[in-house]
Image (cartoon, rainbow, N blue to C red; front, side, top):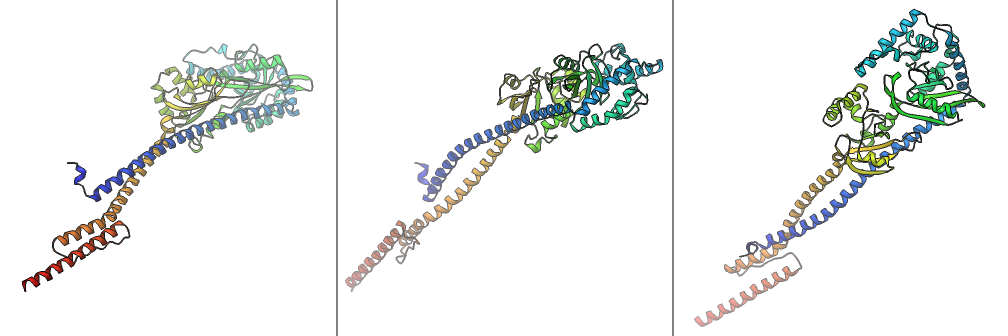
Length: 499
């Protein structure tokens, strides 16, 4: 026997409504869920792509602003006059040799403040002969502006007490150069006599100050490369830039430089060079270290990578959670030397190699957003594009862990599931109510029939509707009425016969 035959009409009605309703809910829900997920995935991808494009424009604009600022400064009378005077006064110091005590103090300072740090970094012996400057002018100026400088910051010394022409020039222009550095967020500013290769002035007074870039200790640095390039071209209003490299005078921290030739009319004077601020670039990429507020969530990051696949910016985790980041790096195939170098410098710039599918595609000129694996082996949504800088081949990348990127979709699924459950519950209540309303007249008729069967011939079924159930109730009542009439007629006849 079919089990459905044992069920009441009310139960069958409820089951039928639930089957139809739930099937419809599921069908519509699946279509809606797929459509919603597709829209959300596209939205997440477009959001990351938009972030990449915004940051790319900001970085490109930053470099363009620096170019424009340098071109304006290159024709500024104060800059032109200061370069000329620094070259003249620097050349006068070539005859100011240090005495034995001063030379010993300079050597001691190098050993304590510079060489000891370099040896700790490299775990190798560093010869002072390979580090100290060789020229009279370099030794003289480094002694008075670095070794004998008692200021907390070497750049705060306005004038040394050596009564030299150089110190008069320094007093005249140093504060102005310092203000330029601060306002334009340069890490340092240099005047270079490209013919001789001498750095005749710098704001920060690092160990490159007053040295020679042609035959001196730093002749193989990227600053020397820039000086040679500009010195050989001597073009007006042409900016050149060298990419980041380890820079010895900055304790081997990576440095990048940008420079322009200075002319007084048609007379070539020398070079105006600035050291780029990696911190400023990081501030642009991180929106002043506010990743979450700009939509990058807990794992998103925007970073730069050079043509050598090395990072040209710091990593978010290095800034936010260095201890956790070190554990993550240690669990990968990244060498211990690289990890130590990163944490020694507290920066991934030029220390971390990012050789991934995304970077390889970007190096080929691709502007895409794909799902791939990052250098940590994590599955990520990655959006990338080559930057249009002209000087260097850098790629900008915006990435977010795929798990976090999919959280929006998972949230949508959860809400959909909850909505389906609530809707099913409401449909069930509606089905039960509808079944009760639908079967009420039927139950009334059944009850009436049972009362008639028990001999209650006065039974009357009342149905509060105007549909077929009402007609059926009227027919039932008419039938009972007819039956009562016939029974009375039979009873009368029986009484007559008996009398």
